[in-house]
Image 1 (cartoon, rainbow, N blue to C red):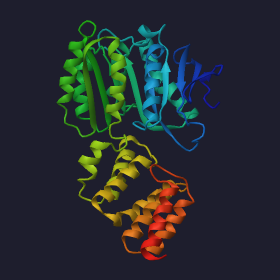
Image 2 (tube, rainbow, N blue to C red):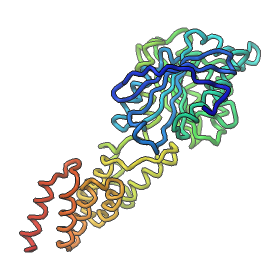
Image 3 (cartoon, rainbow, N blue to C red):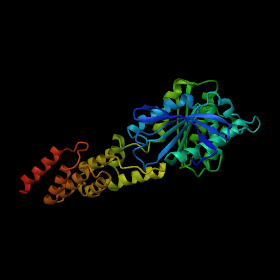
Image 4 (tube, rainbow, N blue to C red):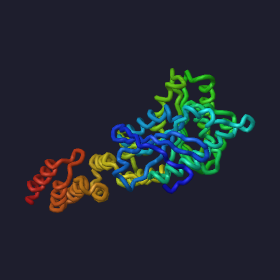
Length: 383
């Protein structure tokens, strides 16, 4: 291994969540002068998709937060409501107090707290970058003390994390007084989530509610803010409700086209339906630093809009796109067949349907359907 100052001393014990592999490792840190246990959940298709990169979700309090976050990430990515991601949890059951130690006067990380701050950015992240295929989109999550602690990365000019999942953060004055102004003037994209509950511990509900009020005032197009105050939720029960809420908020622009999107955006777009699809994926790529494959669900939604509004000329570009993205599927040739059929070229349409018949069935498109289209053309045009 190239990294000399941080050695991986581990036995690969692994289990499976579905097809998501979880690795348990012990890191020997020069900065901490101690060993630290971490857990790593690999995306389901990590080993087979060797050219793909993945967002990172770093979980503090990994001894109890890793499993619920990793499980939700696996579930949401399975349904493509978020991208597949690498989830890394850091166990802190024996070191949490020292890891989050702050100076009493200036409330900045001190002693072991400063070491842990540097360990995350200076040792752990480089190690993960070296050994795993990571994209540039990184999220960090924490609970009460660790949630407050992770906000210190936002005090730096170029934060190493883009997303922050704050679960009942125990905000101190340093963070509470400076964070709104820092985010307001930031030129960096920031995704920020806060969760509290009506039965949160101590004054945490009040502190978090006040932070929500302050952050909601921010007018910065690069700041994406989500929050929730869960009714009848305690300091610990709110966590289970907040994790899926945070994922849905942070990745709301990533999800596939749903019924509401179809009615409110696709059908009402001023440009072509095909252009809407391209623009949507360009936005996802720019927003999350991800290069993702066009989803069949989204391609079929555009097809439905073309049929509903009878904009058959748009099938040509959609068909070429589908052939490029899914060369073994019949969808591309079927769309081109529809294009030629509706534009008075039955011979060319028949040819495309024959090609589609030889390829894999997808969605509602079947070989029987292709035969039916071919027979209709024969009957109508004597082909």
